[in-house]
Image 1 (cartoon, rainbow, N blue to C red):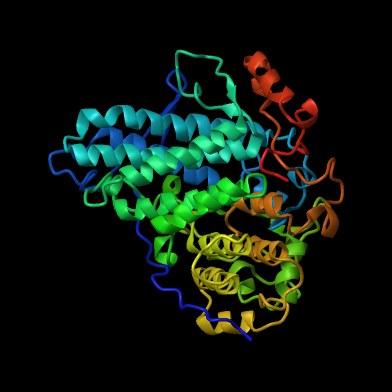
Image 2: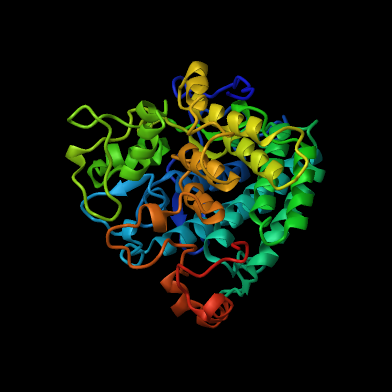
Length: 500
């Protein structure tokens, strides 16, 4: 019997998306600052006294876009997480799928892009607001919204590597920053979210059109901050259940995402290559699609559960079937399914945080004994419903899918971790880093057991090793960070502090 499933309203459709106007970003090595400009933006701030071409807003949108671009891309030199999580498979060159990250230096690319392209821009924007924002309420909101995005960016770093440069990271007078303890950083990020939630003035605006997520809507940013807080609270819940529960309940009381209308999506502009979705830029415009196919394990899971997202995510192969590549085996893309036109469209939005994830988090919180106001089954059903409808499925598709014993929460195989873990893995098909992280956190699917890559050089990665450049340029601090890892070795199988 299917539980009560709320209809998802306010869904952002791929068709008719809002255009994003962001010019090519120029990198300045000396300042580590990306500079961009905008066009056709009539209001960079809700403050009518502010300049219509405020440089701080341009720098903010550069940082915002850099963060989303990195999270969205599949580029093997920075973000191969869909491949590692076996949502995708590599074909001719089975490198990252076999965890050979040294070949294309993905750990270096992820690190550098976040620090140099995202965080440096966001920090620089904060230093510029006071020169071109006159309204004190708007100024305060600008600073807080930017800080919330910084928290998101740092969470990607600390939960990828472990100890990271943090307190000294963006101080240009310190060329060799120390690495802060990962747990200390994580708890400080939660504290920063507390400060942001308390400080946001939802009666005033913020960055206006320069904010490509919520267009200056501070009430939406408060929901975003609370949802991110819920996410980080549950990340530590296995090793610190008391703090995890406290912070989760605080986040729920603040108000988290309630529908797909709350999703933090970045609407790419298909009219200009540089402003289009990075997947389209690389795979379609860059003609690199033949390097990737869907993963056979992912495809087979969807087929076995009659998942309505299957045709929304993938095409059929030449035999009119759905098929995927073997992880780490080297495959021929011409014989396999490919990715849907929707997924690879130039205007398909980037997605940093969404309602489907929120509902899965609430289901998990309920199972952990945290007061949420409903049942794990209802939240689970809501999460699956939100994902299916986001991709274009119908409400009847949702009902049919959840009526299957293999899918229904009350009858699906395994513990709550397994039930939520598998469905979250499917819902995170386009959530890149999170598709990998939820496997690390919940343990499902257990890739080491159910689908080990053909020629993997290690077990499933629990972290990225530090960028090789850190060993040479910041050796003393790098060595201290490595010594703090379990076993004192900079390897991908070392556990982070929140992993039980």
